[in-house]
Image (cartoon, rainbow, N blue to C red):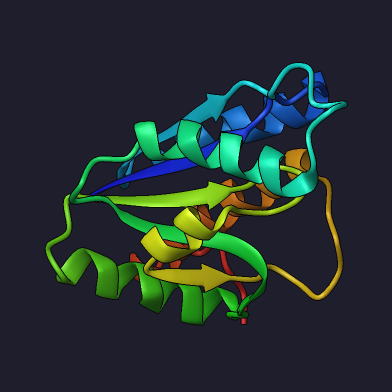
Length: 157
């Protein structure tokens, strides 16, 4: 199984990007992991929130293979502890899927088409975080999940 993190927009903070790169590099020891960024939409002033979500949705759908399993990071999603999330990863690996795609949407969330395509939703917290910070949190949690599965000393109970 490969894991792809798909996100709208780039990471402006070089410090955050450096930390994301650290965990992305560590993850290569466990799984084929890639981060793919979709550029921010241009000229959105005259677009409604729904129009912007629809346009982002079109760009997202172009980057998904028919066999991809799509999981959205959404405020209404299921919350996991790190150990529960590692079990989630294990179940996905055991199911024989080719690629697991985690998606961080744009500022207004996801289009109806994206919700329809998704196999699940995960919430990181009841709090709101910047999309750039969420990339770091997700990458670190995927790394943490794999260290838990391998019984390595990174995670402490």
